[in-house]
Image (cartoon, rainbow, N blue to C red; front, side, top):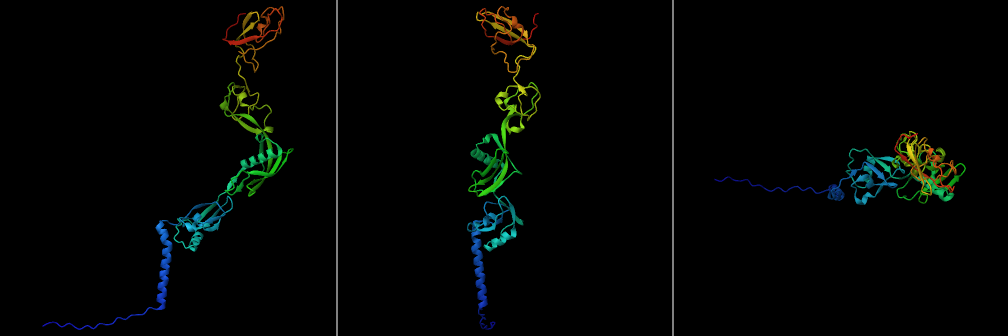
Length: 362
């Protein structure tokens, strides 16, 4: 016998029709998905991540989206978001404000790196006291014929500073200049470009001169080398009249007293070296046109004159000895000579040179 199977009748499935609300919600979900996909796919394809910058330097009047966010899309990087601080000033922007501005552009997921704010500094060209002084000196040369090399302008107050945009890269100029020769007061307006940036300054024009200044200390009798000197410009009223200014006249001379580094050299501080010192022996030779020569050796009793150079020919005239005196009568005095020429004419001179020390015979 076979087992009988029961007869199963198919039951129709119940189908619920879609309502308008369900269709609307589905359409909105698909639209949102497509929108997010369109904005995120380019970023994902490029492999870039939006990151908040830390310190920002503004070079214009506004801050763009690319200045504040690293990896910003090219079409949104130039979009201006905030106003930059004043020239040379520093400001801050809260990180949440930047994120809100990015969300308004349709960008999300910006990495802040834990920053709560971004520091912004406005870049500026700074024209300091050196450029301002140079502009005033050029104006004084043009308007009043003063030599800018011998002038120094002492500006009033603290060191002035002219702030200007970076694109104003021209030379600073002084306009509307006034100068009083009696008081040496000078005032003017320092400008850049077509008066796009300006600063009014005032000061005193000081006349200067070059002076020789020691760069190291010297002992008495030590020679001055070129490396020991430097030339500086000092106010003429603050330096003595006998200061040394030409290095070529000072190099090779010796210190007459101990001199400290930074001292301004005066005429009495240095002198040419003594080739024959007091107590040294010298030979004096007297020659006549008739080839008569008289020589004598003597010891230097006094210090020679400062500019005397023994070993050079010096012209001496007939002095103490006259016609009829015995030849060589004046040789007992160092540096003197007597003429033995029978004609009685005045004849040159003697040559003197230093010799080794010896004990003169009496």
